Image (cartoon, rainbow, N blue to C red; front, side, top):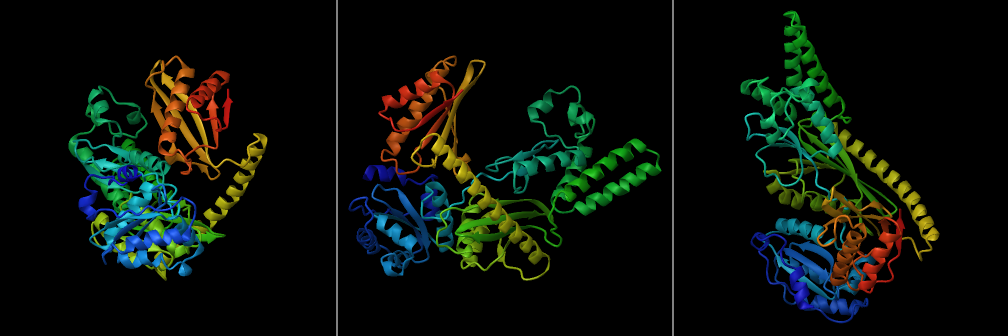
Length: 534
């Protein structure tokens, strides 16, 4: 047990211990895995005796060493000791204490550092008693590079390794793609790769449809292209009015000079600018850069609506539906949401929220490093900011209403599916498998996962085929299933993590079904329902 837990608790990043001053973890494992509140209190008290009055993060562990809950504290000793006063705990935390058999402790230099580490660990371990941000897909940005004579404009996700200016976040890939298409019409910037650019000896189709200035073949010089890049930076940086005024002036001058071809080109660019502004949908007048959040609750379910305002322009909005929110208020859910949300997304210097948050000052302190300066978390009471928040609140309530209606419909479908397939209950996790290759090479096996709330994209997996021949679809399926379930047996033999499927769906016929059955029987697994659809 000790060896397994030690491996699981290694810092995810090599310098994590330097950043957070990680102390040696305190472990106490005792008793059975059956809920027992007295055993939980005893385990907590034993660790409390070793704690110092320092800020940090604690992890509640069950009898197997799995993380039940991650929490932070300004004074660890006081916070952890509160869990021994079970009469004062809500039912949700009483259940957690009854399952607790040990703790790990990490001290930090400040409570703000503890908040950042807490968010990292929640994302890493996804504990059942923490509020979880279900949609953890990274947000896209627009990247305008600076390391080339003819900078490229492109969509970007992930770490910022390329040299250039990043604009975002955008709420979705779709909103980025639409914006980039319009920006290409407006500024005629290239979107091709450097290698593609260097190989061209004639303009590509984008030049023909007036979405690129064709620097690849010298249709524009460096100075002219640099002027377009400067205009694009001004537009994305909030100076769209000045850019439009310049285009209008140039169009009038071209028309006066009877240069109607140039005037028409400038007219098309002006229309593209108007399209971008018109597609914003939400009026952000008077607000330069801000992130806007509003929460809605109904029957124990929550929605958080986010708007992203950059340079006075709305770059999209998205609704989130946090899970594991039993017994929490909107303010508590929104606080936990923000800590996890900004683990991946750089915060704006102004964060507008629709209610007072008990830890607003701590959140602002924690976000300042990523924002590059002081962050203000504000609850505006009047003016443009208040109107924007009211719109976000309406969106949150409407999104939650739609979500609950969809969930009711989905639940009915899943019940009917369980009845049709003669399953004992509706499945909580369905895994779907298929194989593919490209003309006999690059063979892959893939798994997608779905549950009652929809597709669980962060749990999708793919496998490079290692042993089976690419023309042997049965063998590839056998290999994929063998590797997937051998690992499941190794990592979760008791099936307590929720990562075992209640139903497996195979894209194939009797042959694929037989291969999967053989693979599972070799592992001694005979109780996972299988379906093959040809």
